[in-house]
Image 1 (cartoon, one colour):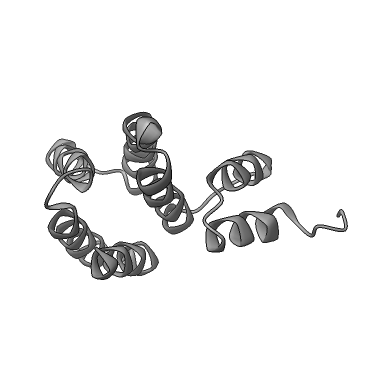
Image 2 (cartoon, rainbow, N blue to C red):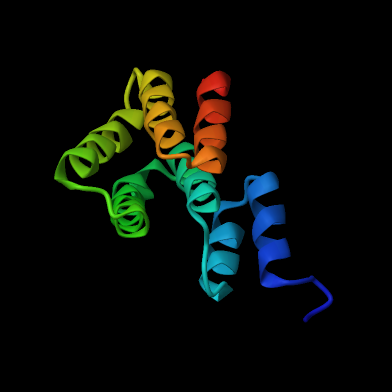
Length: 120
């Protein structure tokens, strides 16, 4: 461990400080990033570097589908909602995605989405 702390500690600090590049760098050092943390990073990218959002959203979608074993219908819904996050009704899309996550009992992920929706 360096004087800067663990990779996860650096990742959390970068997210909290809204430092996209530092968060991406710290995340690359982690063996695993949970869905809730990945969503926080995705939403930070949306806000601070929207040109990278589409690619990041596709990676998040693939990760969501793999981790949850989502079927075709759920996967399509998640992908559509991720696309809508980057639009005028982003907060509505975030709430809908949070509701889907709550039904899946992905409560930390739902909390991240609802918090972001409340701020937008």
